[in-house]
Amino acid sequence: MSEISGCESKQNEKNGQIHFAGYANIATEEIIRTVKEKFLDDVKANPNLYDSKDIEKIEKNDYFVKRFINYQNQGSEKGLEHMKKAYKWRKDFNINNFDQLCLPKEVYQMGAIFIYLPDKENDPVLHIRGKMHRKVDLLMDRIKHYFAHLVNELDEKVGREFGWSIIVDATDSGYQNADVDMLTFIIETLRTVFPNGIKYFIIYGLPTILNAFAKLMLSLIHSNAKKHIRFFNKQQLLEFVDEQNLPDFLGGTCTEVYRRVPKDAIDVYTLSKSEGLTREQVEKLLKPSSKYIDTTNFVYVEKI
Image 1 (cartoon, rainbow, N blue to C red):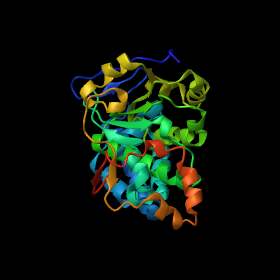
Image 2: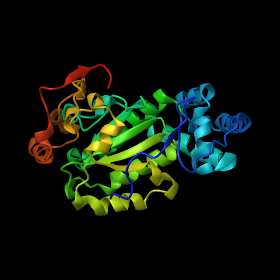
Image 3: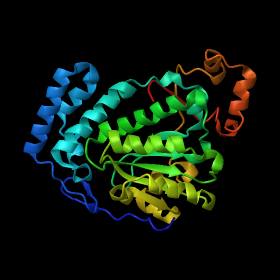
């Protein structure tokens, strides 16, 4: 998968904005104002379709309008319809109200997905550990909500286009970790709900056995978006993130604990019991992932 590698963007030194080939900032102040007014008119006409938290963001920061206009250079009309779709989805998905206690303590103790220290341009990074993923029906919707929650947190924190990245550590991953449903959800979420948000989607250490899965991923992505996909080796990764900002499993020297557990999180057996599963069923589900659960090297937090 070496045909897409390295970092080839241009940095605008004045405002820190990453500009990619084909990107055009067509969202003038007048266009943004017009689209925002039309969108807020729709909110007034259909208040139950939107989340008030989102409306407050839109009123305060033009980025949450601008991104839809600039995405694929689609302009004001398509941008407005895209914006309506995205914010209706956010309300339906309840993205602003993730319940951190809906996942068992063991999921957090794995440290399979977390926000960590920034890259060399001081933009935040979300880490995903591919080998830890298993499709468990009981948890899949909650894992999707958790992913969307973390991306939303990054996106709101940065508040500008191309301001954050995702690093997927694919080391030691195999067919058992390849999940087309989850892959499709991630792609659609980034494209529909967070357009022009991600700077790079980096896959590190991809095993040859998963090349076909990677090709499937690329086939699902618009041609203009493929410039955000990077397949990195160790040297390229270190050119993107300083060693002291990388977690240990990526060869980094950072000692900040990334396994963060909500202090009131309950164990998987207690949670599963409320779902009608027996202990034997839970242990069968846990078996492939049990070796990744670290019961000592984690910290309790009020909020993840």
